[in-house]
Image (cartoon, rainbow, N blue to C red):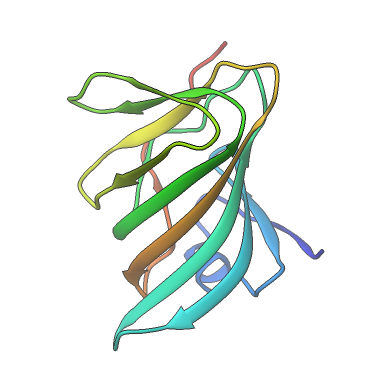
Length: 135
């Protein structure tokens, strides 16, 4: 697979991520599985998201909806203004465009998520809005 190093400010690279390409943003490795421009003005992006064990992703938002299914690992989903929620393989959740959130990996196994993002096609799939926790 093609590895694409993504600078935090490089929106163009994230928007242009090709199917099969991987890039790192805010401590999260994103691998694009499929992409479609639908409906008009929007992109549906199906990706595998990976966060190493013993770390946390940086706080971020999405310009649309994130629908996630947990494949591997255990983590707390930390969402600003809400109680943390624990997730394990087989569980799922949704995050809206207004939720500042991140994953705090708890298990010895890195987390691996299957995510579908539906967002404005002119924007990147995620906007990092803070620094990852130091652990």
